[in-house]
Length: 198
Image (cartoon, one colour):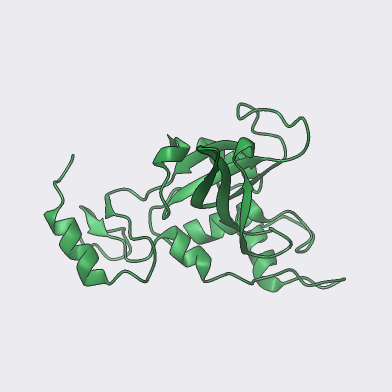
């Protein structure tokens, strides 16, 4: 494995914290009521739109996902503030194949919202947290995201609103670890026993 200073490591490596686990550390982050703004949320917005004027009243779900992704070397990002921009990032994944870790869910917003082929329309984006069924079919998807009730929360949304699920793995990631709760040595042992695929 190459370890050139300032460069992402080359070869395969274990990710001890997933994007989902990092996003969980922001649970409870919320907008400031009234005229003020939460400086962290404003910073997230300005990360990819430094020209932006305004505060935390601007929709910031995509800014949150981009902010978390920027903390993981090599993780792809949309670098845009519209939620549907994430439909062009990573690889498409079907709901039954979605995994907690690096999968991002893009949802429609509003009555009569256009389909996934329209990127310049209202939407919502966050990290995939699971799904639950009713009558044997997926009925809801759990999304860990920003700007959900003006805060970072984990909330259930109707599965019918899913426009796409995108797997946004950094290059050469060998293993997704769901969260910080799984001991790293177990993850490394599992990775070592997994067959290599190139």
